[in-house]
Structures are given as C-alpha cells and as structure tokens.
Image (cartoon, rainbow, N blue to C red):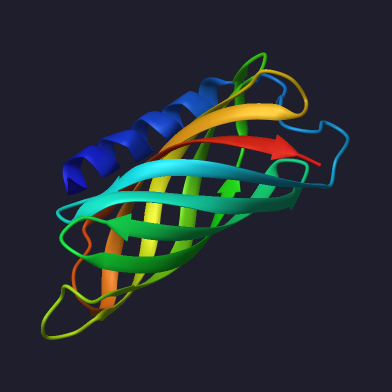
Length: 160
C-alpha cells in the first residue's frame, strides 16, 4: 500500500507541475461551506458510512468527517483533513491530503482507540458550483492504538 500511495504522490506532483489550468471548485466565489455524505472502506477492517463538512477559501480546503464503521463489530471515528486543489480541466480537480484521525472500536481486544496521521490524494468533479462528487485514498501512520493502514472514500458534497 505504501508503494501505491507513493506512486499517487509522484503522479500528483508531476501532474500539478505540468498543469496551468484554472482551478474549478465548488462555489467559485472564494470562501465557502459545504456538507456531504460518503461511503468507504477502512483497510483490513470494515465498511464505513459517514458525513462530512467542508470549509475553505479559494484553493485551500478543510474537511471534518464523522464515520460509523460496520464490520467485525461497531466503531466510530472522526477525522480532520486539509487539501489544496489543483485544476486539471474544467470542473475536475486533484488534491493532496494531510490530516489526523481518531477512532474507537469495541472489536479490538487490547486497545480500543486508534490515533493516526493521514496522507493521501483525491480527485473531485464539480457538476455545478453547488454539487460535486469525490473519491480519495488515505494512508494512515498509526501514532497510538490499533493499526488502520488505509482508508478509501467515495462521496458527494453540496455547498450552502
């Protein structure tokens, strides 16, 4: 998985260096807020469903997410990630991800808490200035607790 994340980072860096396109993002007017829903997979453990809120200005974005994990047993988690959007073509953006996550799961026998750093990349397509879909993948560096090696999400976002 580390090799995949490294390859995505290299592709992201080379694409953004070559790209001189204007960034097309949700609510092109600058500052914005958005809400959305997502579904995903937490590597080696379970399926997850959740909600997220986005905040940001121009090309910078933050995303605060809440996940319910349904798999071996019940889990709940939260994460805070930051993105920088790079425009590829009209309505299509790619972004690197850096953030933190905290999870609780009653299935893990020795330590029910997980805390880690997330690094990854994502891609989004804006249908309009109000609606977008996205997918992203995050590699997790465990700082404390049980190991959750990666997360992958697909979701929809609506500005307000």
